[in-house]
Length: 99
Length: 199
Image (cartoon, rainbow over all chains, first blue to last red):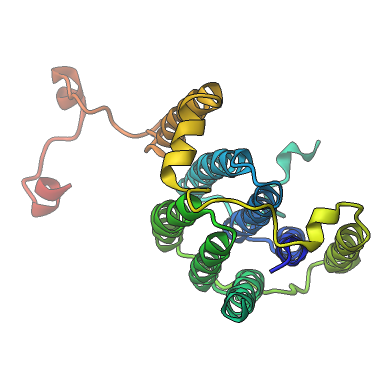
């Protein structure tokens, strides 16, 4: 398979994730869509790493996976804290920081 | 070669179907399950790109551990079905998909019109040990030792942060744990009912 196929597939997944982040209102689903975007980036990194025949792109993808895991843990912690304080689980209602 | 293309289209179709499912399914629980299918399809694609270690890590860490965390939180918060197109959303809500479509067109033009000649090849010649655990570990512990340690500290900080964020907070009006003699004297005299014994 040509590398460009993988890159175009990664662009598709990234844009689906971006559309989800912009249209959904539940923070849980927004976090899931962020995962989609990060994974699309990972796929592109690994495809480019294969293209130049250098393993360093895969290290980059591994670090992205670590950062994604941290982001999930903190995001889910915030959602649980919102639930504990009986706040609505909806990003449109949580707009106090908008200024 | 034919088998490789067949596998690419099966896994790529699965990845796109999973991604669309994450965005379009109304129940967050089904969204999580769609993301698991998406991640496993991506692991197959990683294998096609000879990234064996990352494919295994994707299945074990992502589709396994991280998604279990998601399922727990969705079960705890009780993910309610939210409407895909709520009535209260203004005209701005229609801009999101249009913007995403524009971004996709731009990215595809950028890839197709790219000057990278290697994009239209199957990649550089690599040996069988490309992307194997030994190669990844060798690179991580020699050239990329500092990012490796930084990642481990980041994970530690995230774990502590999650515990601080999600721990049970005491309200202002809850009684303290330790009752002093003064508290007992100040309170109502006990009536000896069963409700008191439980409560």
